[in-house]
Length: 120
Image (cartoon, rainbow, N blue to C red; front, side, top):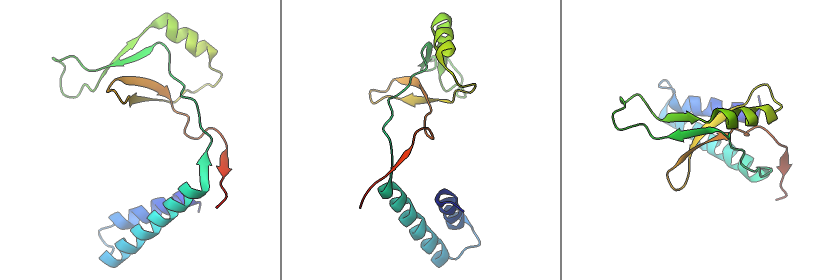
């Protein structure tokens, strides 16, 4: 079992209604400790943000029903050019909110790149 699986298992124990308060507390403490170790000892190489060009996210119009979360505007020629430049068969993207409140589409690069071990 890798570290991430162990942490996930511990958090499941914390949420388990059959677990005692002592078990939940011990599991939460261990999960936090493992998460802290992982963050201290492993640092991902910084990545430059990669935006999906030609796809723009807008707030829903004021008459939109409550289940409409946002609008997507696609500039077809720009998106096609951008897609043509991509080499992977799958592109995972996520809608993010900027510090100023605007929305944008960014390529999800979470698992890309090597992990650098830091010295203590």
